[in-house]
Length: 472
Length: 63
Image (cartoon, each protein chain N blue to C red):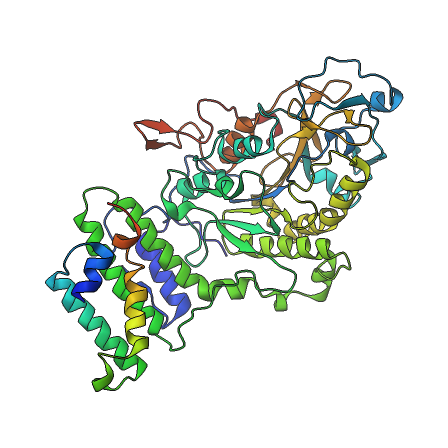
């Protein structure tokens, strides 16, 4: 399925032409193929990779660590009492008492890893999960923290991790983008800039596939032109003129090249996307396992996102991110300020079964060996109440889990204090997470650079250490 | 065509561009099955040209 040999641009175009037979957009561009290596042909990694692709399940708004993967009996014991540690500034400064988890924990698998009653399905896979309990991020506000996780910087304008990976390794698919966001309808705060290519060539920008309940994933993918060839003739005319233009200008050829290549990719996607988004070759058992037919329409939608993600990964897309389903909350679905019990449960019931099915499916198909699944929010939630039944933002300590792609399973890394408030042992920052993910893909995060505005930039800025303890 | 170039690109059309554009119009007209005496007035044909022109990178991006 995925070719390991290093491909040249000519090879990629050749392969795309073979795949499409007569449908040869290649024809109007191949003659102009340039000697320099274009940004999206395959590039060799720095060293042998353990993983080839990543799927990131973004739990937008921030999941409570003490209600999911980091049980704290002391919170239950002191429930309702004044919180005994110094309280850092919170978002709403409406801090209540110590708040024991309303959910119960059980140990699962051979590893005996505790998981709360929020995730009974994901819990079946604990022996494949590496839970990091010592995540810490510098920012307690959504957009900044989302940017931090995605781009390594708290402000807009920097390239997203998926863009860096696309830039570093190129695309394995001639007919699909290397970075796809499968959007269930709720973009995280900070918006589309979380998925931006920033100052990297625009070919590395995420492509957003919108998954509705019964709608095609990309609504505007079909050409408007009624006659076959009508659109291709226009594209050929545009490409010729653009090449001419790119040759005339003194700088900015890279941007023009990217724009031309994006048109080329869009053309190829008119064929590839309807195929990848059509689930008719999936068995009823698979659709059922993911929850595609669920009466809970939020869950059914997330199930379709998960299934589409697997189909994209199978076809060589390097980085797939799933957003949350729209309509759960006005923004940041996991952001349970008012009612942790009801709102966290509602969110968990939407994602638990689809994610569990995705893990099982990837494993069954042998894809989990070289695919990293990342499950994380932008921060955690306070171990004391906001008001009396909610929890506020907690950047000082939170949990995430990774699976597959050479990450050790059945493992817990790091720890928070006895209240689950601050990460205190083996602290892992977003930079460390990014460095580790790149490492598994065969990229040295310190060597993946891009010169912009007079200096070299990295995804991890001047930070980041590979978390070697969690590598298999 | 001269006025299209002035509006879109703020410069006169070059000879190469004029030739390329005529070639495009001709091939597109044949593809669309437009009779020769309608080439100057057919809306679909000029619609396609305008659509292509506003997608030119010279129009979309500042130098």
